[in-house]
Length: 146
Length: 399
Figure 1 (cartoon, chains in turn orange, green):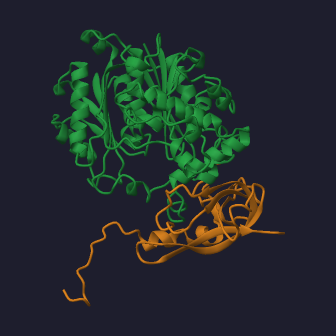
Figure 2 (cartoon, rainbow over the protein chains, first blue to last red):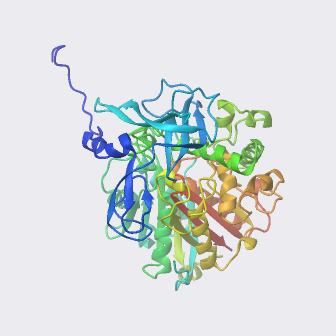
Figure 3 (spheres, rainbow over the protein chains, first blue to last red):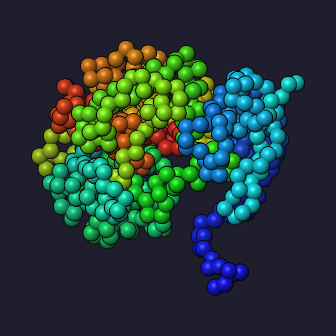
């Protein structure tokens, strides 16, 4: 092997790019499901409604605005893989304006400024670099003044 | 769900947990052999007596695709023994026991073993937990971990029910005290933390109020039918096991519409635990008022407190006050986590969390808990969860 062709390091558990792509509508647009029979809203998307057992569900774009229910400033030394260089990462439960709850990072605000009840809106931001080498993108939330 | 009594009562015949501090040279095969043969000796049984089993593991830690056959092979059992593998995060050991309990209660066999272990071949013990999650497309891929969920839930519980850090610190302090009476606890011979250290609002305090690693661990619990126990001359400890789910996506822990039993709750309450507890109490013919001691899954102090509430031992939201008033101390109404709990006995995921509490209950009910013995204990409750209460296992033991 030359410097131009180093010995490859086998990586047997690289996560599938297909898997990452399959849920892109949920991660990029907060797309969940609405039951065509009973109207229940779901996130993440579902294939059967657990309320009425209908299998007739349609894509539903969840509200992109909501309020912080509670949050945690992650600074205790156990960051998620790929997020080691972020100090004081804000992770929150957000109640969207249509009643759906999601977990999300909150950005563009310092830990001292964030508070429960704060209005936020969804943005698409870069997350971590996957072990395929691709960057993962997905929803985060940012303060929303309206 | 039906709670009709099954035909046969189930008795605990033997149990074992591997010693702490074995280091990372030990293999999961070696650990399983230690636990299984020590439990067999405790029960005074032969490997030939075992008719069935179930083994819990974390699928991220072992790369063998068919763990049942490996388990039968490594234990030297006859190859016609059914050994059902289960992987369900920290509650896996409880599910293995649930399987084995059903084998006996249904009459399928008379002697069976529940095994579980936490020991990694494929990844180190921390790394293996990162790429898995409650709903990995929306937590692992977006960078949220099970530990962040736990810290978030603690903070929400405090906000919702008006607590500061004192109940969690008091729970942790009490766990440390129990652990100093338990030579098998991870922190048995370590210095006691001060209450000031446990009340630290910073990252050191968060760690001090959270679970401690116990390192590689395996457990084995042997259950037998009542008839078999009588023929063996066992002074019986009867047991019953139940479990229930809640949706795995953490956002759906808020007012989930898919099950009427969940619509009133959020992450500060545990409806799966409530359902599992109701069912197992009915199977055992007890109420919370009959319970003498309790071992719960306390990866943080507030986790333990929320579990007291989920088990119906104290009203929702009142667990913190109950702990501050000494309700879970040795002389309290419900002495809790008397082995030291996740905080001081140690947390080893599927290998320890449920069956360690179950084994502690056996020791307590048989009067063999040494310096931490709770006098007169006759009814014990054990609980553990997997992936943040998307699964809760609850067991009752009665002497």
